[in-house]
Length: 406
Image 1 (cartoon, rainbow, N blue to C red):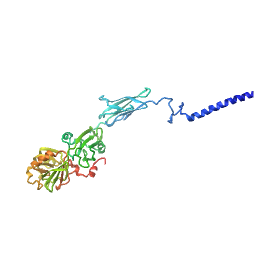
Image 2 (tube, rainbow, N blue to C red; image 1 turned 45 degrees about the horizontal axis):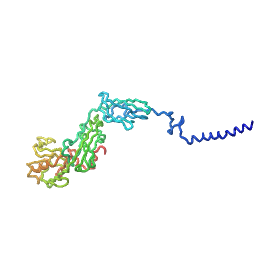
Image 3 (tube, rainbow, N blue to C red; image 1 turned 180 degrees about the vertical axis):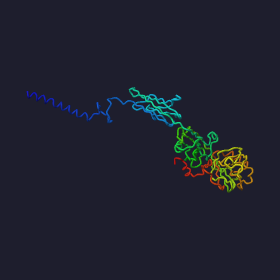
Image 4 (cartoon, rainbow, N blue to C red; image 1 turned 135 degrees about the vertical axis):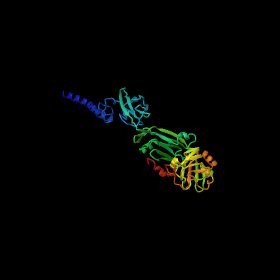
């Protein structure tokens, strides 16, 4: 009996040892899942079940948001099936777009001021289980809305284009307190590219000019993306605006108070020289580059328009022909038959550049909005930067300091 028991033990020992070796070997060489596997994530598995789909809305249940703020809906662990954003008063639906994988929906049009929007979104996971998420946002109600008026008016120069000296101007209907926030939304894209910068003349007017005169043939795409932008003091941007300007040939007139002559340069070449009379000693013409801003075949010149009215010995009122404005304080290039005898020899005007009839008509038909009149040796002060288009009176370094983003 003892011998049989020993033989039985001897046969089974190798089998048990083999099973033990297999048991020790498996954990070291397999990645097979078990009931408590963490799948390499460090977190307990869900017994083969994926996490439930969730839907989030941004901004969620917010008040007084900018109407330019997009509404974004996202799905996690699934996809979006539908999203509706509706104006609760007007019952209009806001347009939006899904991402390619349908995990995100983003509104594609601005909201309205002073409105409430209800958001209803649904998502689903791979097994078809669905979830609903709702939210509501309210937009700010401004006390005032500022429009971005543009100078020159795009329609006025659509056919002629503008000259190489033309600054681009946004004139807002209300004062801007948050200038940096507004300036970030303004842009001028030049083709071919040219360096330029903004300068705040005052709280309502901001000008853009390049470092040098524009290159002839330049196309300017000008934008103000100010809708929904907080101007400060309860004022918000009323609308976005984008316009295109074209720069025509270079026309630059150079008026010299020493020689009493004015040379006209077309694309850098002298094409005409004419005798002139500029401002007399008591009313000298401003020095520096001037930019033509207005023209009329016949125009009533009244010094009272800039504060020198009847009763003042400097007051005047006269009808003049072939007139082109070069500053906002009464300086024009125009015909003046009364000063023909002085033209080419002395300065006798109230600050204007006087020409004879033939030269004034030629100048009128060849020089236009945005073209430049550079004045030297007039005895006057530098044209102030605020005097309509005194932009070129500043050096490039000085001009850049006028940006709110410097």
